[in-house]
Amino acid sequence: MNQHNTRFGANIYHRFTHLAWRHQISIGWQIARLQAQILFSNKFLLFIALVFGYSIICYVINYKSQMISRLTQEDILPVLLEIPLTVLVILVNMQVISSEKDNRTLEVMFTTAGSRYKIWALRLVTLNLLFFVLSLLLSTLAFFAFADMAILSTAIHGFIPVFFVGSVTLYFAVKFRSGFAAGMISGGVLLFYLMFTDFFEDTRYSLFFNPFDMPRQLDPETWNLWMWQNRITVFLLGCFMQFLALRGLDNRERMLR
Image (cartoon, rainbow, N blue to C red; front, top):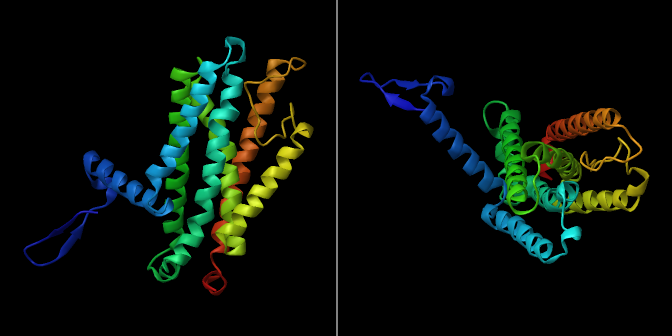
């Protein structure tokens, strides 16, 4: 908020919605940048470099492959988007709570005037927005470097399961008060799921449902219905897990131990 001193010494604060759009963009950018630094422990550029380095490796491998073996849209979603973003979202959500404890700033959250839910909600919204933007960038990169594909829909389909995995990791981080435990449990559950992924393949119950890989025995209308059912359910479950994580932060004594 902008603060101006009057001739009488009083302070006048302007609401964010009353500011000019340029000031709103500037303030929004500053908030997002600071939140990203906190969430990624000042290693944001390193994480981004690793993700795009992985994409470059995939591009080189794909370029040197035979034409018939190159990635198509149905392969790009799991290989180029879901794999790197899932690994990254687990690493980041592991340290959302643990980094606050290590920096001794978690207690400040409980003593800050006003609702601490607003602070955490802003942080989580920023985190998920960053991952969606990253998914959109990877989808755009795939369009120009790999195959002709739908950029926005691919980004959305790549983001939703990543959002759910991140929400589960955050819940475990709050539940066990340990980022390492949250990462181990989330990774273990995900590995266990992948071991039995054949049971969920070509069904609406797959976490990493691939709408671009439609089975031949299904008609497009049924497949489209399954897609909507899967995406809405996974997204709502992710929101529910984040709600449980926020509710778990109510216990101050437990969290600060």
